[in-house]
Amino acid sequence: MIGITLTADQIRSAPPEVRRWIEHQVLAGLGLGPEEASPAPPALPVPGAHLVACSADDAGKILAQIQGVLPAVNVFFEFGRPGIALGQPPVMMFRLIDILHHTRLQNVGQVMASLEMINKALIDARKDPSARFCGFDHEGHCLIAPETQRAIASVWQSVIAKQHGVAEGEAA
Image 1 (cartoon, one colour):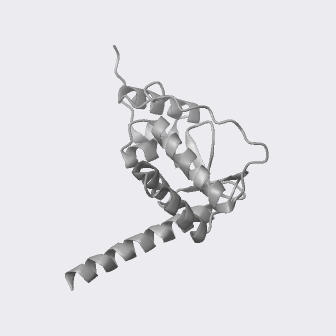
Image 2 (cartoon, helix red, strand yellow; image 1 turned 120 degrees about the vertical axis):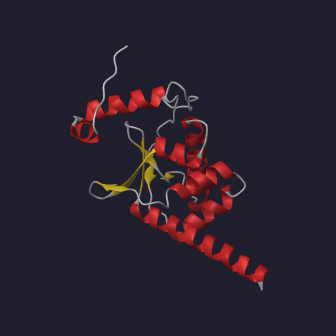
């Protein structure tokens, strides 16, 4: 076995395919690679499906539908974090592996199941079978509309404010 040490600058300046290979090797070494994840059933493309921008009202309706399933709620609120804006029109990009890490789920399959539940809740809330909360790319990223990220952050703030109000009410 041969070991190689790379600096952060060397990794940052490496071509994208090399960075992906390094990420794959690290994740596999930690037991978090795709081969360790229970496979999620492949999502069948829905004709006419489209990514929608959720309002705070939509986000509240989604939360109301999934609130009994803690993993889905945790995944949902991950999208309230700042993401990376890409493209024109812009979309917010979140790495599935980061969502997995932050939510402490066991594998990416569980993250995907939660995302499917969130997508279904949006379809029910909008009464639009073609509406999608999120999309995916081929590099393990989940994509949402920037308005959706802001709406989820707003709902999160409301939940925290409500909790704070309850705590203050109990202390009085």
